[in-house]
Image (tube, rainbow, N blue to C red; front, side, top):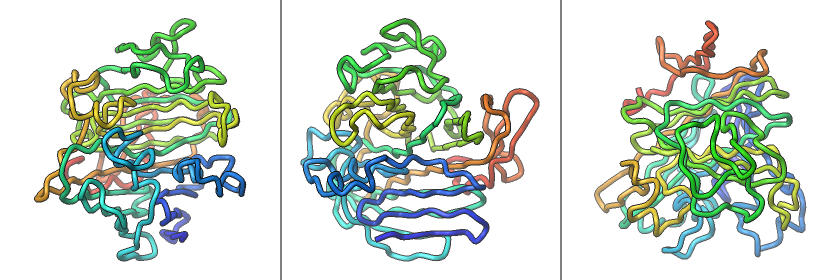
Length: 351
């Protein structure tokens, strides 16, 4: 079922209740989220050998557990991205849904709303037992690349091995604090630019600096002339995992045509290392951050996330800082220009 929300002022979004995927987002005249090229192909949509999350790949979805689990028998990115959500209540611009399946014994609810020029989400994970790595999975596509800016990070870390052997431009495994000269297979790579190369799949995990009020990633798309800003609560989601998908997968349904896509995956996870690795010491937890949520029958986890998008005349802008002022979220371009993104979410843990 397609659930469509609108704020009556031009902002709108759809939720596919069969998978929980959020898509067809429009904010301030900008359509910020990616749509896979095979969504209208019957031969892909009926191929059950392909996980549902990949057949319906678009927009943003919540992963629980994140990635492939080697502990529980679920599809990649979990039932939250591959199975039914029921609508509990809704208004014109907001909805509350609940995942029909349990995740490691936990009930998961999704709140989604169009508020103050942003798409605002909160996931509640209630009860359960064990350790659960989680992440959001918004994807942005750039027709002609763009600039990427980040809140302060400790370090960038690649996994033990690339996603696709021999189709990578980053080195694996490697760690660096220099994002503009990150070690690559053919020289240094600038992680603040997209694309980094053509015909590749790469993955890197950025670890948030300590004591940040909130974390953010900003993408200034060159051809589209817009600015997309994604914010998170770093106390709950201490890492931002970047998926550089630019034609490096030659098999179905990708077939070399999934290009210009950047996944901005804010999470609590051990990068691409997997579920089991997230529950023990790993390359990410070595930087004193958790890599899984500890579920308990009397505990509720709140995961906050928001997406902003506005037109931007400057095609090569970089965001120096994102901050709250007078209830608004503001992007400082570092050139004396400040841009109001929209209303800051009323999240006490963030602001």
